[in-house]
Image (cartoon, rainbow, N blue to C red; front, top):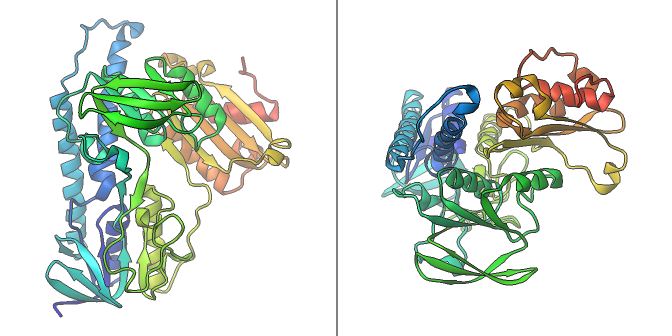
Length: 451
């Protein structure tokens, strides 16, 4: 037995490295094993590379609109190789930063995959490590049904290594990832076809958001209630679709699969008594402990709330429980952030049909906001929904920097503020944050700027 640890963490993504560092700061002897790149999916093949590319696309779109601001520029061109090189630099720096933080906090790092060897035992490479507690933070993999196996079809694991833009691209799945990538590739000049099995894009958002975003996707072909039934070729491809209007064929150079992710369960879990939940992830209680005493699971591996920021919160709750402090995990009011153009963000519970009949709603269009006019930004709005008693239950924002603005709304929803209490704060003028103020005033009937 090489080492004995108070805590061994398997996986160094947002949940894993956060847990390791927090535990080390509380005085525990901690080890962490990572068989791939530090930072997990978020840093390497998810949040960070996507947003790095989206920033380039956003700048390109702004340059194309420069004449609106009295600035003349030559027609911009995309150098995708340099875009990728920038993405690689950003990802590498953040990944190395995670490793640096672990070492600075005296966490022992094992650069290999790890599995559960039994109660209180972890195998890391050819080493067997004893641990008082274990946190499983092994993340998830992109779903790839048999129909889409091989053939060179991309998932998020492959798309960020692509060195050339395709002429045309079919994106299968119009959830968050699919919508962000459709926005990115279409802005860069790729002919994009978006295919969604459900009846609308962004099916987890409210219908008013789905409808609004669909109207804005003028350069993207959208097929909803459409299922891919057959694929021919290995690039270019011919996709057969089953749609409400009958069979259709889509011919494209590349295919990108964005239909969700599945938990990555390390070997030995079942033998150690770790049970799974209905979603195929590891089942946990309110403190993230599994059915095996002393073994915890956080992040995507639970198969429930696959957000990096949720994994980090779960890490804190699990470490608190291990060290005998803290409260249970709350999944109330998790914000959604979608980096399309315009951005989409929301927080709070979606009212039932019965609740909708009694709710109160206020909205305000972005085009009527002073700061938006200075930015030549027209597309977007904010919507605030309260209970009949006036307590803010849900906030939706479509517009520039919606993903930043939603944090203010999330605090209001989480703390159960009324619209009046929310408006007690000052909203500086001219700012985009005023769109929340205007929507709240519209709800109360006190708005003086509503068109």
